[in-house]
Length: 322
Ligand code: AVJ
Image 1 (spheres, rainbow, N blue to C red):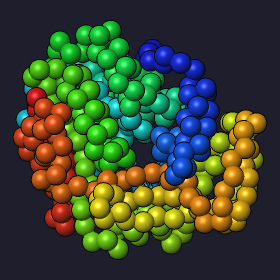
Image 2: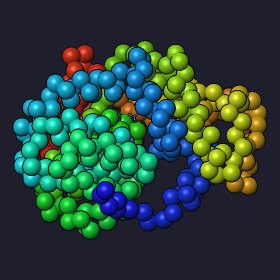
Image 3: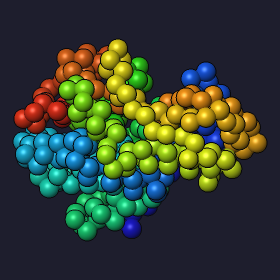
Image 4: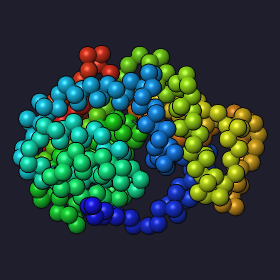
């Protein structure tokens, strides 16, 4: 079994507590969406990807099925592939199936559970492949800098693979910072392949984040459950409900948890009061026009070389290069 390298500057539990306290102390209460993915949250997200309303995963996989061979043809031999936030590691398999002589695959994940899952999934499929798993948070620029120094990844040619429209979770400014880090990681002759969710009919977007079965609502509320379990908190889950909305001005879906009543919640000894109808903002999912994404990439000094889309124009895979 491959050796997992851990890129953790501080204890992950105290980071979680600090982030939760800081988020709930804001005027507009918020919680970082990266904490959705504990074991239960990761399982709920897998369920979301199979919902009729959630076109995102299905559409991206159809693009990968159709175009992986063409994408692979554009990439050189002896490539190292880094996948930040690889999750279950299923999406890289499409590309790996068409690439020869891959030097190494580096799954980079904040969840140990998901990292192990991706290893267990990929090792038997690609027994020859050198897999070097990394446990860490790719949103921390310091960690990414440490990574490129220690592994000397920046002196070779790499592909940074970032599917799933994970980039949509970040504000444009943070997205630029992350793409700058990808620029550094891929090396001067490298490649960055990013999946983005495109702007589309509002109702299609809203349905994707508020499904009939309530899986997305459960996914959203699981964050409170996790905070209760891990941070000694007492959120009453029956007193919050899920809400999603489309913010036209900022071109993003927002998910919120709305307090059903006036109430006080305690987290690790600190009290937070909620008025009736007050929200905790839990996630943004930015939807891009290709033009806007091209401009964003340019600010990270990456230029768009090629894109692949589905027939409905719901989703795009974008190949970027320094
Ligand atoms: C994993 C970030 C792509 O924004 O669509 C799904 C997460 N949130 N349903 C997204 C999510 C609610 C998802 N990403």
